[in-house]
Image 1 (tube, rainbow, N blue to C red):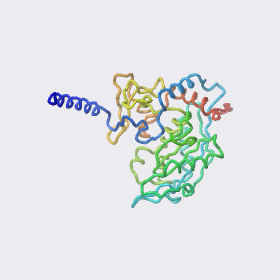
Image 2: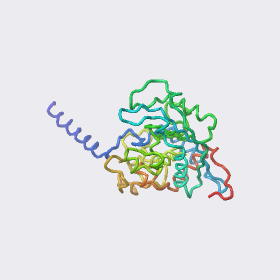
Image 3: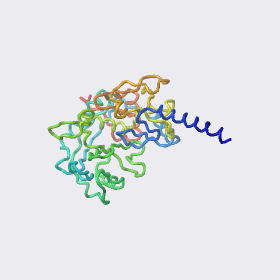
Image 4: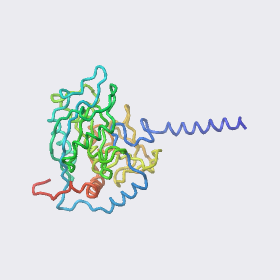
Length: 330
């Protein structure tokens, strides 16, 4: 009996090993956020189904309406304790507010041709020391509780604006409209948190040592991606809620015109290289889509279905962003 069981167990192990080896490089079957975006994943299957039914029943923008998003930028310094040899996280080394204006221009460029526009509604600096409570080791990020306290305090005066918190070495994340929170465990933390090195790169304004940022993330399109989440879009490679195997047949972002694909970004592939990670499904991987996680040079579009979804999601969850179109608006 024992002699029979050993080959059988070995065979099962080889099958499972082969299945794992078939996974795209860099894929983590239970991590939906991706390498550069930690936005909370879709909720449970039942809750998501109810939300999708509500979205489908919500109307799109009317001819006399458009979406205008006032953006308030908060440049937060002092949240990161540098490792030896790293630059200080202080006001002197923080990006200038001029880069926030370029960032809004990048949003306008990305959403050109849709009913969406963005306006600068303010920008300021703040020292994270006022919210920091716990000592940290070099390289550690502040805990969620401290970030939430910061977000609540800085957003209370203008809750109907999009608040973007630019920080050193932070995890990029956005608050989906149906939860209005960047953190699954902390309700009401609305807005976007982004590593400030993903701002549009202008060496004269804010030089960056890391050549990866200078080469791949220089156009400010990480915030375009995060704004997509803020407006209700999922990653184009989103796994179905409660599915941890990344099966192509269950990969869906609930948008009809984005092909099913699987997350494959790592250090060697995913640099705007055409891929077909779900060959049994129609279409190639959407390498140029903002809701994939390709470098800035590759990302260039939202699909009509994604624009429709954002309109419906904002009507349902952020209706204060929908305003009458004015004469002369695009």
